[in-house]
Image (tube, rainbow, N blue to C red):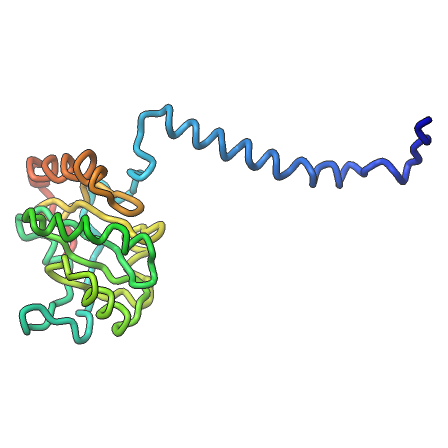
Length: 207
C-alpha cells in the first residue's frame, strides 16, 4: 500500500520549473538547429550590417618581428583594401583552435592567387609569430588588433571570421567560423567571383 503524500513531499512549482528548464532549452536549441537546416541558408554565412558598405576605417600596425623573404610584413589600413583587387580579410589568433583547422585552406587559397590580409585578434606578437612560423603565412599583410577594437568595428562575432572585400574597399560577404576545403569551394569562391564582377560604388569608401 502506497503511503499518502504530504504537502512537503510534493515538489514546489519553483522546483518543477527548474527541472523543466533544461528540457526547454534543449528543445529551443533543436528548433533553431532544425530551422537552420531547413531554411537552405549556410549557418556560417551570418548576415552582417557591413555587407554592401565601405569597410570600417582601419589602421592596424604590423606584427612585430614577422618577416617574409627577409623583409618585414606590413600592417594594413583602409587604403590597402581599395586597390582594385578583391581581398579576403581573415580574423585569426594563435589561441584559436579552429584557426589552426582552417589554416591549410588559407594556404591553398593563397597558392591559387587569392589576396588575403590577416587581422590578428587579441594576441601576443610572440605567439602569433610562432603560429605563422609553424603553419606558414598565407597573408600578404598582417595587422595587429591587440585591444579588439578593430574587431568590434568589423562586427566580429568570434574567431575565425573571413570577409570578402571588393576592389573598391566594400564588404561583400562575411563567413563565420573555420573555412574548410568544401566551404571554400562551395561558398567562398563564388562570393569572390561575385565581388570581382561587382560594379564600383559611386561614393568613396572610408580611408
